[in-house]
Image 1 (cartoon, rainbow, N blue to C red):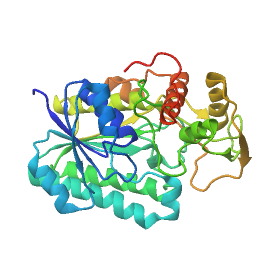
Image 2: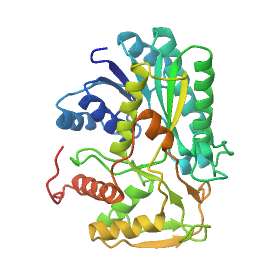
Image 3: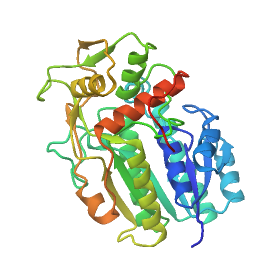
Image 4: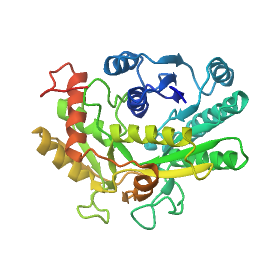
Length: 348
């Protein structure tokens, strides 16, 4: 198949934009649907700066079923990568109905439009939150789901169940990527994580504190059963994560799938604590961070990290970028946003 077209929902968001770059670099044509609820339209121009190609863009809400159907009917697509979803664990605890309505309805509308237009292949953006607090670590793809700690986690579990049922009914083929904690930015410093309002994730909170946008970081809980008492997560560079989506697209397009519904963990397999991230950031950037300790936060599991053996072996994908590259690229992106000169030679 020559230059297949990939439709990327949420393609101007953090993970979506990096994946669009990697898809274009691999010769795919890309169509983006994004409602800009947690992204910015200028990212389109940044993608063009990096790749030399400006992807087709539709500003549309996936909860608007007629709009979704019109876009699918107007474009021939071989694969859909579905990123678009609300994603804040904390917000989902406070506003569960918002998350159930948006994340499930948008998936249903995409699946219905795919069925109506004969699109058979979907890559689903799932999450390590489906595991809750795993009884054993590292979490493998066979690790039983625990009760989700947030409505966001519930929507990812429900999304996977919807997809598995649809695949078993012969409606589509799907590869579900359960990824852990995406961090970092493109080495051009032209795209990166760009949260609206106060960041919900650790890395942008760290970089915004270092540059002075925020006053201090709160480490939520230092009494967990972990080596330093703070939560442990599996942090993965967003570019590595983007490349996993490219690998999944190739696998499904080349009909190398062994099941209509496949699942892969996407992480590094290494657990790193919140306090380790803070100390490593100070080491690699020479920036002193103002932080304090606080009480545990509702919805936080003490430790979650991946076994990536299946993705390494079957998907032929492996994380390559280390913690220093994660931190330095995230900091360079923060400097770029602030209009400061990025240290060193940054190539695209």
